Image (cartoon, rainbow, N blue to C red; front, side, top):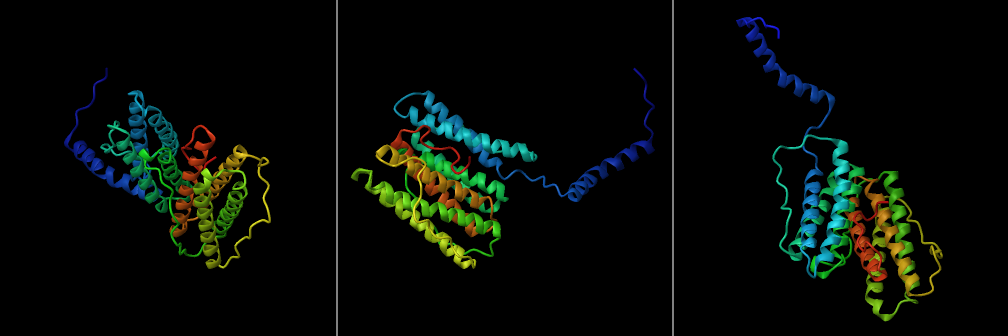
Length: 314
């Protein structure tokens, strides 16, 4: 061990002066670099998704009539948490020392339903404020929460109504192209709902009528926005070729699932290609609508998982 020379008064004063300068210099360096050290906007979404995963998982492990439903919620929220965590880790922003996270337990499915509704609203509200690549992810989280709700009336199952009238600003060519793709998907979905009506029984009448009306509403919304942007909306094709021939209830249900999946993907693409708040709101509403309808049709077909964690994302 070596000895150190005793500190004299000048050394102490010099050390104090350097310490006093350290914080301003660090702050100036941060400002010059342009690095934003504020908490990550996605962190509250991530913490909520992790807490919901734990709460739903615990409810499932407790058994009972709702165990399977709770397990489906846990699986979906876990998938959302993984996607959010990956994005938060990628940006690697400083985490606040004290962060309030939701409780990791719930009393029953009704409490779980409330948590899903809150998560859906939290994500949808955040979408307009984010960079484009993050808007797509968070919009998909909102749609995934809505999809899970569609699993049961006890979780808050409902079909969204008409979309808001969107008054957009000047759109980039990239946004216009993405919206034309969404319009193409809506044209195809309207055609598909007309096609399958010949192969599905009267038991499906409400689903067919509401689904077709929803896609006409989204189609018309696309056309209004494109026309206002000075662009000719693309027309529908004379006919479309389903992935597989439609000849019975099974194949009819499958092609509807494909149409809703394609529409969700197209609207997710709009979210990733525009900064316009009104257009993002329209895209989020349309994405949520396709996600909920897709869940209903996947349940009819017996597909698992019935509710996709991140609708619109590959």
